[in-house]
Length: 155
Image 1 (cartoon, rainbow, N blue to C red):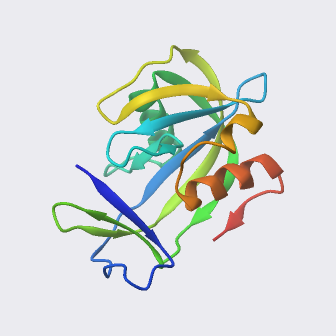
Image 2: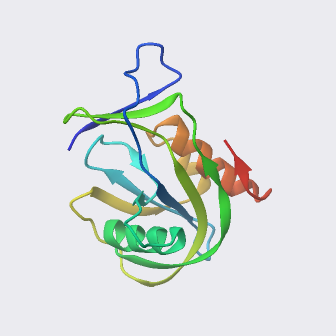
């Protein structure tokens, strides 16, 4: 389902849903970050998605990373919480979701890169490669926050 991201846009539609989600900054032994190109907006992003009932946030990040990229991860920390009410995702079905994501830090422990129905490309990217990729500002902020290692941020 296609989506459009709005951040600090006065023309953005008003949110009508709030769904807890997890994302993961997955860093390998060489310092590269795992990214996927989303099928719903064509932008590069961290793996992640919405929590299922009864699922802890860490398990959500592990599950979503495996589903979207083929990589099995272990959670090693927290990057931050991201709940900006001025960042919404508008879907073709009329849902307008306010951002609500816990971003976790993780390392790969198995699996192999593969695409899914949610990702058209996946790969490992060095920090200088990440800077040139098309992505929404909120995702770039999470990656940058994960790079600093300053501990959890609240945004």
